[in-house]
Amino acid sequence: MQKTIVLVTHDMDEALMLADRIIVMKQGEVIQFAKPVDILEKPANEFVKSLFSSSQKTEISTLFAEEIMEERVISVTMNSAVSEALSLMAEHKRRTVAVIDEKNIFKGKISRDFLELFSPSERIDEALLDKENAYVTVDTTFRELIKYFKDERVRELFVVDKEMHPKGLISQQVFLDVLYNQFS
Image (tube, rainbow, N blue to C red; front, top):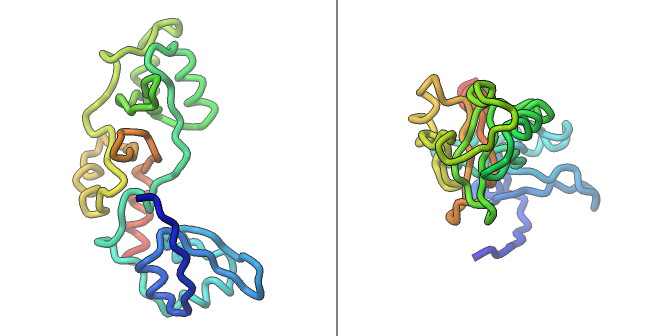
């Protein structure tokens, strides 16, 4: 549907419950523009912190993958050289990259440890991809994420939309941070 609705409110709980993104303004100046979970966990300054201090922390049951994911996806295309994927991983300090086709459709993920077993000139193909526990959809709930991250082999999950386009990444560390903040 892709509609933008602007709601002006002074009810912080309402803003946290309804919004995908929140803009906090003071005297006509934007102080912070972020997801509700980021406003609660990383307020830009004391003003923002004080506005939301009476609001309860976001309930885990209301969080979706899209709300906690890192939005920058590092990807390579099918048939890329192993050296290209390893170079991107080193440059962006990642253990894993998404593998996409020419239409930006998510095909799987591939890890640095696995790629290092191959010649740098070898090409990435379907046989090299890890497809098990590789992705979740943007509307996957936080509770559903638990079943993935309880598997000690799952360090990162890519987040895709309905068309299988990669939209973000959730690392095990981000998942644990959200869980920790819920109970601290």
